[in-house]
Amino acid sequence: MLTFVHLSDIHFSPRDPGSPHELDEELRNELQLDVVTKARELGGASAILVSGDVAFSGDPREYAKAAEWLSVLCNELQLAPESVWTVPGNHDVQRGALRGDVTRRALRAHLRALSREPLNRKLEEALNDDAGAAALA
Image 1 (cartoon, rainbow, N blue to C red):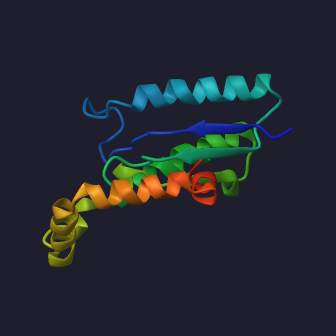
Image 2: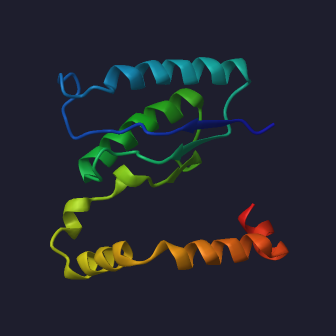
């Protein structure tokens, strides 16, 4: 039987552990205890899935802290580090890296200026088409 541990929004920040600004540290500690307890009750875990927002702001230090925490969790669950699968979320983007990018600003302005009517019409056409509706379902 496959048993997955599904985590989301663990939001590691670059702040020091124990800092009053590191608000999620205690929550993650409790989460770790709960995950290990529940996995043992179920006979172990097969993998860890992290769906979005590993980091708070896409800072490399946040990923280093997350990797350390996930490594400890893997050890406790007797999983190889390769058993952790992640999908990035909106907080996993370094937005500062794109600031001032002319292309990005132009694209956003273009998207904001688009009329929603053509988009709504295309979605309606896709939903009224059997193949399109099946693909969107």
